[in-house]
Length: 112
View (cartoon, helix red, strand yellow):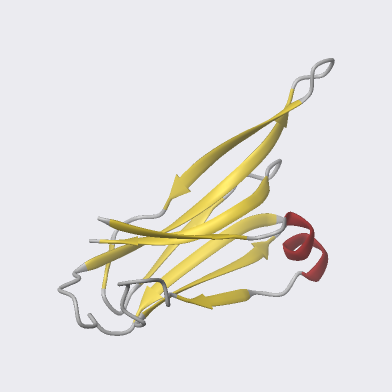
């Protein structure tokens, strides 16, 4: 399983409100997979899709989004966790979403 991770500034995603698509041009990763982050009713949403298998033998992919939640009243601290979308075949979209009270810390996709 191979993972490609992209960091995104929370201010840019929340303030801009526009979708951000990033091609997977990392080291040995095929350029056939893409991931996009956007807001859906205030929730962070990552969508990944692959067009063709590429040079490597790749059968499935899934979206991954990192969410941050502010916890605690007197001793406030951030808790970061990942949400994984379902494994999808080439040509289908995989979607992962954060909860309503969390913000987006980053997004990526995984292939296998």
